[in-house]
Image 1 (cartoon, rainbow, N blue to C red):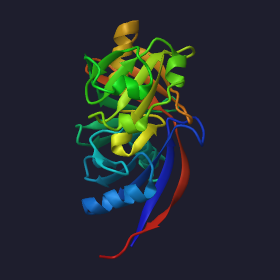
Image 2 (tube, rainbow, N blue to C red; image 1 turned 180 degrees about the horizontal axis):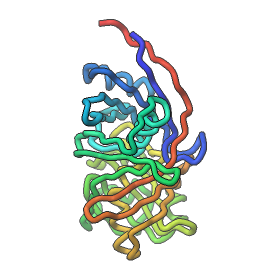
Image 3 (tube, helix red, strand yellow; image 1 turned 60 degrees about the vertical axis):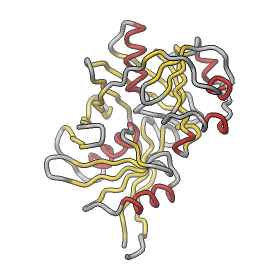
Amino acid sequence: MKQKLYQVDAFADRLFEGNPAAVCPLTEWLPDNKLQQIAMENNLSETAYFVDEGDAYRLRWFTPAAEVDLCGHATLASAHVLFEHLHYNKSEITFKSNSGPLTVRKESGLLVMNFPISRGKEVDPPEKLMEALGTDAGNIFRAVDYMVVLDNEEQVRSLDPNFFLLNRIETRGIIVTAPGSEHDFVSRFFAPALGINEDPVTGSAHTMLAPYWSERMGKEQLKARQVSDRGGTVYCRMLGDRVEISGKAATYLEGEITLPDE
């Protein structure tokens, strides 16, 4: 059995930056264990699958270790595949997901995603978190992820986490952020519990980052940079309890994978 597969660099102005995601357009769902095996074999932070359901596309995301309820960069990559390779000719795509309906449209050379926001509450740091990050400063917030707010960009860039300790924190992921020198804010995202020590660019993290920095800076539109080794630029615009998260994408690979007949 042959299955079409694309690999797309999301939140990337050019190839070899941003966050690579695999995208598999399906005509019908494969068994969940097969979806997980493909994601494990791809060994990227996310593999996205979608099926056309007529009024919208049902979209799911898998890390090498688990299915997740929301992924920004693989949503961006999926929309890129539909617009650029599968000749989707409407102005906006609607995806059905475990996080509700998500839309993506083209605007001014960007792909613009509309996601629900995630507001964090300030909390005390869980045991070993600051030791794992190698810092003793920062305000801690919690929603789906922990978010650690530091004073400046260099503190974020210079972190060298202990991933063995970080993997013991009970959470999907850990965001570390600070004001940026050339951007409104910068961030990094660590998710060893999902099989991803550091994610290059994390769209879903910006559902928590954008409302925090919007309120702190008094700005509805923000330009962000995730300062991983690959790096990527993310544009955010607050819309009440929703946030638009925008970026560019570039196709790296178009091919087929071979699945065993069962």
